[in-house]
Amino acid sequence: MKKNILILIIFLLWGTGGFFSQMPDISNVWLNHHKPYAGTIENKNDSEILKINIDISEQNQKNDQEYFISGTSEVQNTISNFEGSIKITKYKNGKKQNSVFGEYEIAEEPKGMHSGMFTGKFVYTFTWNPKTEKIEKQSIEFIGTWKNYEGNLVYKTNWKNGE
Image (cartoon, rainbow, N blue to C red; front, side):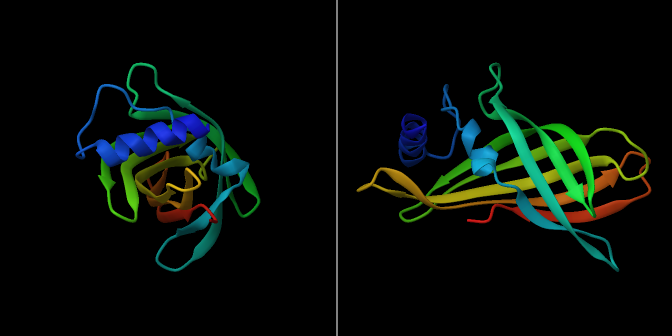
């Protein structure tokens, strides 16, 4: 993993924001150290706690900017299995902070009115410590919507890692 992170950092520091022929595999980033992402799912009048656990993350072998994920979502003790994808669309390297931007789409198992699709954008920010050769101050935030499969419920969502 240390090698993959170093390759990512070199790529981000050397890159100009465009895509190159080979993206390092950063599948482990989305696993969030096997801890749940926490956030909210809300409509105009109400807000509920949302937990997202990503259990599996694999880089797409045909498109190295995309990752296939699966796991569970939890709202009010209702747990749903899901599958989806995370797609990297842009990189921004800075003097102190680096950022990776993209989109996500997650489909829950269809189990009635309270199952649906999460869609939106994400930003992954971090700093690289050249002395320790490690990522520090890592933050991943997902902002978007959840829409049930019937199409009559649409909620805003926001979830992030706890670091």
